[in-house]
Image 1 (cartoon, rainbow, N blue to C red):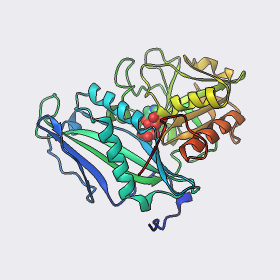
Image 2: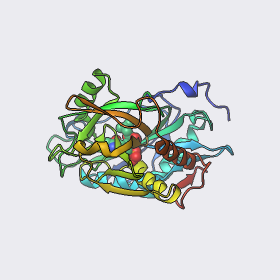
Image 3: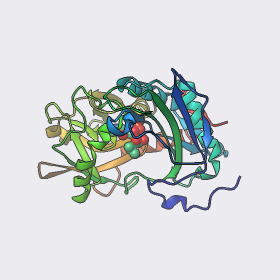
Image 4: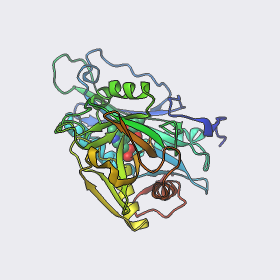
Length: 340
Ligand code: PLP
Ligand code: COI
């Protein structure tokens, strides 16, 4: 199979139309078998609940090429379960875990030529989603649904990649204390566009959200979770009801404990106490591990390890996690799904 003629190392995080995508319809109480299609346009009723009432959710996961020429997915079962939680929250039918994984596998196989080769620095990003469709006008769950998966090759989400970037706290909230913050639903992201735009316009990579109830603790970093490494080598990540439970973060906690022998805990991270951290980072599927150079809060810049150099613990965490994802480091049982 001939790979596409793409400068893999120059890819950013942008849409590319690949050859095939998966689509499945839910009607009369059940999902159909789903199929791969070429058309990247969807035709839906103007009354679709996803358009008016945000009845939708999505996921993000990646396929990685390995040294031996294979392709593998990283913890797709966790994405499937998280999507089920999102579906439950916004009253949509759940996609069975096996159907979710099978759809991802089909999309990767059908677009193998677009999957970046091992060592290229790029990966294949998969975007599963569920949307409420069908004729409707009142605020209620849709009569029909689509579950789709498409994918494309991507490079780093934040421009710096594995280089430190700076963030700024915002006074705006992306989610309510007991709202939809822990679900991957579109409304959270619509609510983040304005503060993201402001942060970028001021020269920052993105904004840091504080906990919506008290604005005293770090919640999330734009579209990624936050972690800090204390001066006595502990991995700390926020404990909050309004952040997305990041699969990268739970994986990193295990990597920190089992591979690097660190203590890894979820705890409140007070913005006024970030001096305790020797290093900090943003973690997520798209962000991978993005080192945080510094955070500006109330006009004052707080620099962690350095604004230009990656800290030693962040580097180790990155090398171990990315090594596992690419098949170079032995993974804990159940983390890797080979695309057959
Ligand atoms: N937080 C938000 C708001 C996100 O959109 C993402 C991306 O999925 C994450 C955190 C990181 O989650 P994960 O590591 O599962 O990709
Ligand atoms: C991801 O990391 O998969 C995300 O969903 C982040 C962003 C592109 C929304």
